[in-house]
Amino acid sequence: MKTCQRFTRIRSGYETDIRFLLNHSDRHQGTVSGKVSAKNAIAVKRKMARALNWHIDRCPECG
Image 1: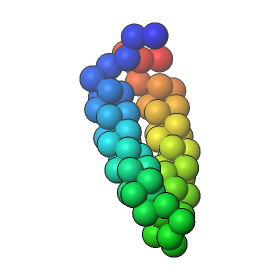
Image 2 (image 1 turned 180 degrees about the vertical axis):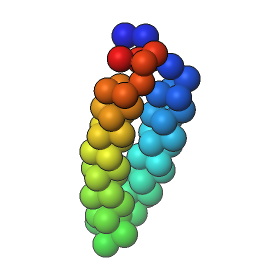
Image 3 (image 1 turned 30 degrees about the vertical axis):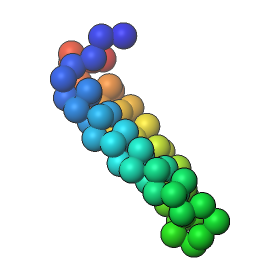
Image 4 (image 1 turned 120 degrees about the horizontal axis):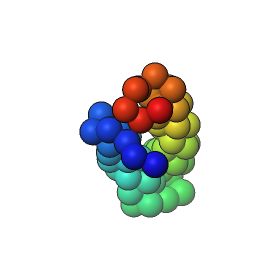
């Protein structure tokens, strides 16, 4: 599937946030902040999926 530059920019921004949260979760494994970061990473993945689906539905270049 061919995507536009905006799609790539949206995805890379979310992936950076997810990577940060997962790395924090790994460093602080078993602590409250580590568990919260893991849950937040899951929430950000869902938000990324919604944002990318919304983009694909409305972008003339991607859709």
